[in-house]
Image (cartoon, rainbow, N blue to C red; front, side, top):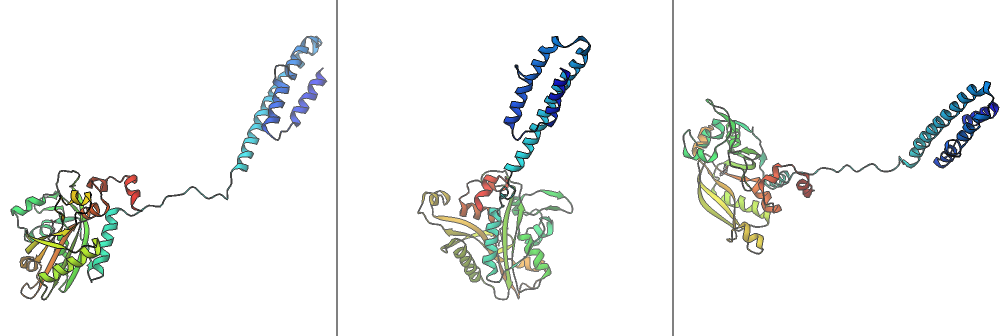
Amino acid sequence: MIKKLENHILYVNKFDAQNIDEIDSFKIKFLGRKGIINELFSDFKNVPADQKKEYGQKINELKNLVSDKCEKLTLGIKTSSKSITEDYTKPGFPISSGSLHPITLVKNRIIEIFSKVGFELSEGPEIEDDWHNFTALNLPKYHPARDMQDTFFIKQDPDVLLRTHTSSVQVRYLEDNPPPLKIISPGRVYRNEAISSRSHCIFHQIEGIYVDENVSFADLKQMIMYFTKSMFGKSKLRFRPSFFPFTEPSAEVDIYWGLETETDHRITKGTGWLEIMGCGMVDPNVLQNCDIDSEKYTGYAFGLGLERIAMLIYQIPDIRLFFENDVRFLNQFR
Ligand code: DAH
């Protein structure tokens, strides 16, 4: 009887399987209710007394051997079948490529338009001093116009602050470069504003300035017409007298957007006209503050908000969307 048991052990040791089904029937054959192990146990009573101990040990050995074998073979088949289903020639999971932010798209387009007519790019720091952001731009301390551009101060006396407009770059460039000069300056600006769908404490502007001999308001009008025609395909403009401390005279530019669609009515408040930028002739005080002879040179300047333009072009209803970095929003600008 011991001999029979040993034959089983030999068989189990040699057993191999090609698939899970073979392992299953092997398992049932030995460990099932009517399987070999139970059969061997029921033979126990017929084993001579002096062999009972060895017989019992050998049954346990066989039982463990079967269990181990099943486990090992199952694991082997699982790992090898994995290597069969995994196809390493398949293309990888797609990595979606990013896209430019709508503000960047608008900025690049405006830079492109002005580069074509000779404007160079010049950028300035976002952390500014009082001189470049206010004083040199004809906004002396305690001037009421400063109230309109309340910002975040980093330090006081001497004041260091987050620039409220890109006009500060005008000063930096005028100080370092003799006319003729013709630059545009895009960048981020800050104001202490209540955040709403229309205004934010961070936004972007693009500034332009041209200083030379005999620059006139007619040149300014012509340039803005060229710009709106290239940017929006529209060039019917209205110059409304306005006030900026750094230009004299100053104007706000409205573009005739039309009243064709319901959206046109909504964004122009039923008038057809839309304000798009501020501009004017550079105030002689600004030129003098930068050591430029204001008798010899004149210039024009303009500034516009990039969010405003982007909201217009892409029909974006809320300025906060630009800063939330929601991919569902950003994905739409591929
Ligand atoms: N700096 C002005 C603002 O932030 C915009 C502006 C208006 C810029 C007229 C100019 C200009 O250069 O001439 O409101």
